[in-house]
Amino acid sequence: MNVSPRLRRISPSLTLEITSRAKALQKAGVDIINFAAGEPDFETPEHIKAAARSAIDRGKTHYTPAKGMPELIEAVREKFKRDNGLEYSAGQIIISCGAKHSLYNAFQAICREGDEVIIPSPYWVTYPEQVRLSGAEPVFLETAEEVGFRIDRERLKSLITPHTRALIISSPCNPTGCGYPREDLEYIADLALKEDFILISDEIYEKLTYDNFQVISIASLSREIQERTIVINGVSKSYAMTGWRIGYLAAPEEVAKAISSFQSHSTSNPATPSQFAALAALQGDQSCVEEMRKTFEERRDLMMDRLSGITGLACQRPVGTFYVFPNISFLNKSSREITAELLNEAKIAVVPGIAFGRDTNIRMSFAASAESLGKGLDRFEEYARRR
Ligand SMILES: Cc1ncc(COP(=O)(O)O)c(C=O)c1O
Image 1: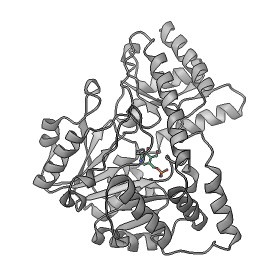
Image 2: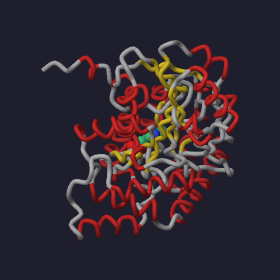
Image 3: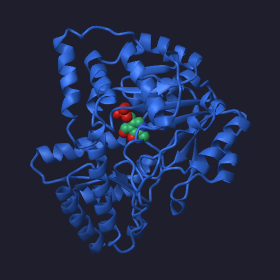
Image 4: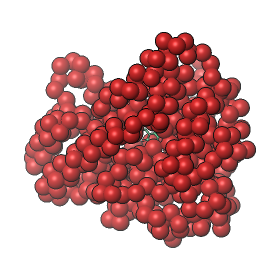
């Protein structure tokens, strides 16, 4: 049976592929240290799990409105007000099956055939594929490691054409862990107004930031900017809830309305017990988030400390996420070759930078215990020394 050309263009997620390869080796008894994880290694906090159990026990196991239940939409509105200083009406919020689904809906809603979407590179693997699925074309904006992967203003301007429909902002960024300062966001916002394009702001790592880095939602810069921004967020990373599949977006009302209809014919509502869990996450005690954040920060320090001891290796200090993105060009091999050697010889799983558009780097996640990270870093150091 022939697969449609639309889907034939899509490649599988390399990050998920590596994680499952590492897991298969572990299952076969090989002692692999996993630096490839794309999710927190913590348990979902108990009060969140309890809320889902209680929802099931109370018979909350049926459909909700396709765009999410009103209580959760209200909690998301509150969250935007509390954390980002953003006011939205209930009609502007859509709850979906993870931030990935929210992003997919956003591109489907705004892109036309032949549109261009600018993606700062390195980028999260899913952005280009979702842009292509919407009929638009990804246009990559290369950023320099030496300046913390910040956007080069002249380069950005040079990529704008009459077809430019949107720009993706991912701050803090997966895979680099870097974030944009206010002045960069202000520049981007001014340009979006002047050149008339939409901003898609992916704020999924908002709560996992270090060194007092403050995430500023670009939508909060002005009313005009809010009206041309779609904000993406969710509970997956902040509350260790990746498997529950709850994400959300806030968009101008007419876009949200279109997404609501689209979702009503595609997935309908995200799982009802998961929505109750997300409600408990957003409305409950937030100290669990701070505890996880602090642990991640200690691990980030451990990673940076150990990586700085490897001769020839350069690594930007992440201000958020749970990834570091070291430059391994001193090894004179492609990131895929290095990833294969690290897995087969050093018994550590990492993700090749090429998956994120940068062949000179690898992504290492610190979503693992300090003990495991230490052991894996010993192996990495030994591997680098032997080259
Ligand atoms: C930058 C970025 N955005 C969105 C997502 C998707 O999150 P979710 O699990 O809520 O779909 C991820 C997950 O890895 C991510 O790294």
